[in-house]
Length: 318
Image 1 (cartoon, rainbow, N blue to C red):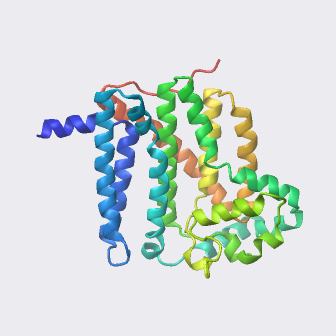
Image 2: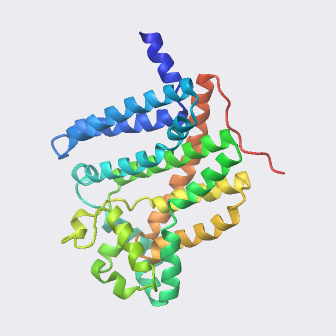
Image 3: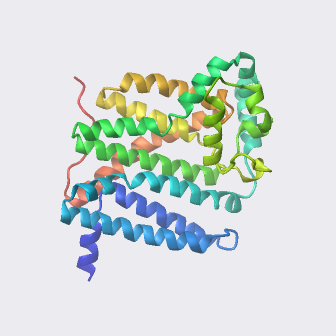
């Protein structure tokens, strides 16, 4: 029995193990704080079921060698990232209690002498806003561009390492939300309801904002958005993940790297200009990116060595 269990576990990719461990981390938090978390039992049940499903999928993929199962095994991580994001929505505020915006605002004011989002308001114009809102909305597409290119080029080890790094980055940022819950300057330093009026775009801005707001649990018509919005400000996940993609695109010399550099730079600036983040969140995103890349290589290679598989190294400079 123990041998069979060990076999099932060693058939996991590093990313499978990462997803399972994070699901169980959330399970433990749900159990510890069950008196505060409304849907804790549903979370525990789903996390357990999902973890079993990942183990089953990994082992079926190894045995069947079916193209559809193989792709499912690679790409199930996308919904798992979003599902985890929505699960912590029900957990961060009950566990952490008070928001930390006042401290983040104070740090920005100490560094710059002004509140950066308020300072940038004087330079706003609809064309710039439109460009930056579009760039900000490419957040989920930039990792996909990188991962798909590596898969199409059959750089399988690079592909697996990149996917692992991206997922690890998301999960680390989620932990940051527990440690420093905050709602951001569009609520604290500005009037959220006036965002479209104060920094209007041209054609797509308002629609893109509505999509982003809905993803953060504040769809149109939400009566008290400041109370129900996701606490997901520190670190800036947009900055962290974009820097990871830019860094790996540079390391792998991908075909779309120059496009990613440009859009990524605009995206990071947009996090503050569009009032989603404080500058200290961006700095936090940089620090979390460095932590992610250090841990990613160590953890990825440690699991692969344990399994007797190939270890990852960055390509040598040409």
